[in-house]
Length: 460
Ligand SMILES: *[C@@H]1O[C@H](CO)[C@@H](O)[C@H](O)[C@H]1NC(C)=O
Ligand SMILES: *[C@@H]1O[C@H](CO)[C@@H](O)[C@H](O)[C@H]1NC(C)=O
Image (cartoon, rainbow, N blue to C red):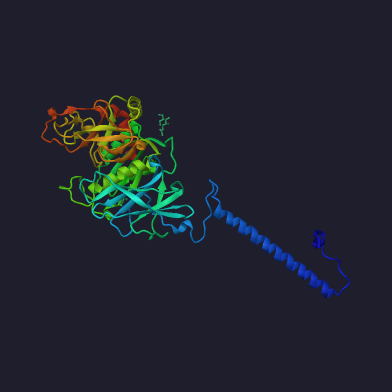
């Protein structure tokens, strides 16, 4: 039978009507059968390609039933604290470290008294998971507390395709119901959303210093900072209102940091004075997390406390300061800035900044405190830092622990920290302190902007 015959069918023979109907029915059945086979073959081929070919780069692969992404639990607050299996350790967040050949670096909190092998389970978007051993590197600065900031390093094949990861202490126990961390910094960026980001390591207790916070934020804006990040454990009711304002306005990123739900954090850095599981609300963990998180988002990161202002004294703002420093020291990635204390107990004489508008705002008015303590002899005067995050591997509070370009101590007369707080040398009289009115140079614009903010946030 040739093709034409098949298409047209045989000539109707002079048989009975019933015979003809039967034959038509058979042909119809045959056609339906052929169509079903055809559809099945196409469907099979199509679905087969999904499994054997990588999905096109720009299109996400379709969810594969029973292994769909919905089955993987990724914590809601992606940068929070997640317990590691049945261990005393915690994982915080995961990044590709392009400086270490693209390994996955999981910033973690490790209990130094319960060391054990840990495994890393990393999965691609198509739910292909691999398990490898980890290299746990506890940062050398833990100040003697049992828990320390740590890098848990996962090295394996095809890490560049991994989208999420978890650390576990039981090999082979991982399943898709456990909490995975999304992997960040997958792609190296050469241009940045921000030039200057400030990372504030921890906010806790009932801290309610509204006026100083608003003044500091507005000062930072004038100095060229575009982004401020705060790790929030808790704060006072008025400051809460101001934080919400800055978050809505877009300058402030608040990272939830409920460390007190998991551990007993110390309220200071000295274990002899401040007992606890981990130093100062996990400050070292958050500082490192902030650096990795902004590695490809910010050209520079300022690491300082909530009541500290890194202040240029020879430049109008941070951009020209860093331009000069960086061109004089092209390879340096860490700039150390001296901390200087401006006691909040010493007031300037004229009283011109005792403004009626600020009378009922809780907190310290930094514009009234222009007396600076002299550096103490034979005492280490701590520094804070401006860093290029792409050159930092591990950081502590006053210096880095591992970096790629060395550090430079910025001269005191070029840049220093204005730190208004309780005095360190309370016995000194006003005459023994230096007058330092740098903040007044910004007076006009600064006051205008502070008032504007206090109005918008409902304080005025
Ligand atoms: C960062 O600085 C460069 C020049 O130094 C400037 O062109 C760019 O607009 C700045 N970015 C932001 C977000 O301000
Ligand atoms: C800071 O954290 C506390 C405790 O979780 C929370 O009640 C508060 O709303 C947070 N504040 C902001 C501004 O996110």
